[in-house]
Length: 264
Ligand SMILES: Nc1ncnc2c1ncn2[C@@H]1O[C@H](COP(=O)(O)OP(=O)(O)O)[C@@H](O)[C@H]1O
Ligand SMILES: [Mg+2]
Image 1 (cartoon, rainbow, N blue to C red):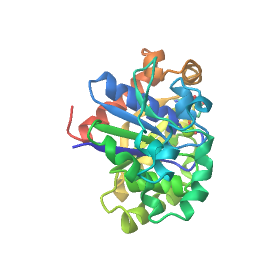
Image 2 (image 1 turned 60 degrees about the vertical axis):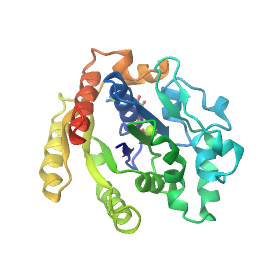
Image 3 (image 1 turned 180 degrees about the horizontal axis):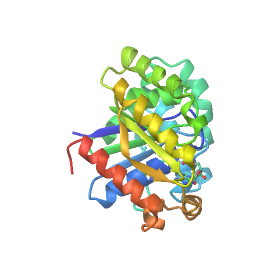
Image 4 (image 1 turned 30 degrees about the vertical axis):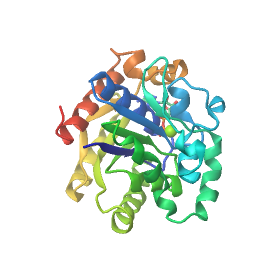
């Protein structure tokens, strides 16, 4: 059975893209097959895995979501394979920005991504999707295609706000489109243990959400300058700086995800 995870938060800069890159790479490093999917028109995941989004026209998730299934470009859609990482990726570029408009007129527009990913369920044990920083039709497509949501939350006060809105969207998706959608958990990111309010926020997360049935991962991802360096080299931190505490954090998170699915 395969597992489809949407990494979602409508707030930007909370570590969604870093989480997808590092989780996907760690899953592969541990012998699992994983497809990473970029759903952000800005192509941050595509760039941080070493690709130039502008050179990938015609082979992105846009074609998968918008073209009819008998279109040759839809049928030819295959993941690209990272030269540096060996990671399978369905990339995104600015073409995806118009998908929102084009999907508006499509029948079952929330299910376009689910349709596009179905052929890959056989090949990959895990599919991990990186969402844009909005709760528009792209994120809803991710929630409709997923069996679980992973929510990165920056461990500063402002990041806590807006979580209720996200949880409401998840709840609505569960009720209207995808009753099987689970919340895998919230993971604290950009954590700086020298800052008292960061540990306060972690405590708040652990106090509020598990009581509502929303797990918070034991793993916390520390803040490190290595993340930006890594993105520039086209590799996730777990590959670029494997001894960095950020890499430890993502390996620990990966372990928790594997435990959740009972596949250690
Ligand atoms: N744990 C971290 N510590 C420090 N910087 C990080 C960390 N995770 C990500 N970053 C950096 O912060 C910025 C935002 O992260 P990103 O993963 O792109 O967030 P999002 O996808 O939610 O917008 C990027 O420049 C990224 O390299
Ligand atoms: Mg991002």
